[in-house]
Image (spheres, helix red, strand yellow):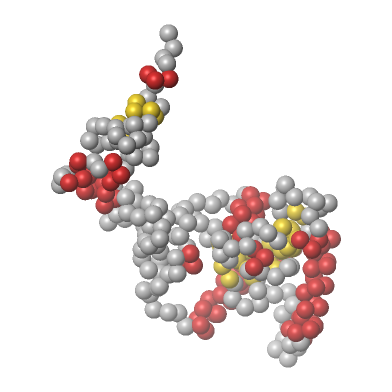
Length: 273
């Protein structure tokens, strides 16, 4: 004979609730609670006032994200012994050495105050140029020291630079494909599109691919879409970053902002781990 609804689950032990929960959870105090009142501090668990080593150890493991306004567990929260780093890389910010949740793990997302000494700008520029040379090789338009190129001439004149970028975008429009498979050319007007050139690290210019996004797309979603095109995995241990490759230092784009707010139309993008 089938059980009636009243016989399934159990009533929450908190007198002010008493809801019949189909999947009740048993607390350490051996009472059943609904999911809203299972937290010991919410239902006034009597074991909170007792000095139980097991309870103290469990509470210390579930450390919160270091961002004061965030109440999510950090990426180190469920590690049995955070001091034991054998065979693993601690999920700590390399700058401030604190533990954060997945949402705030990037230094730009928690206003990181780095404890390491600042790297001189000249050294950063040299490292950035070496990174570009490693992944993309020497620019195809490089010439002798005394020679000039149309690109370098146009950058000296803001008006010519704007014309050069506009011409590049016009050429991109003819071969750009929608990055999101849900978008169609006849459903998104041209003025609402953001065109990008994407190249993987280590590939030459001939392997570049041109896509367009809606200008309302968030950078995090754009990163997920591009990662699926290039079959790149994204995980907490190996986060994938989207880089804006300009003439200067490559810039890591924030995933919590709109893509159109961080790059111009026709920008060049790449990936980094």
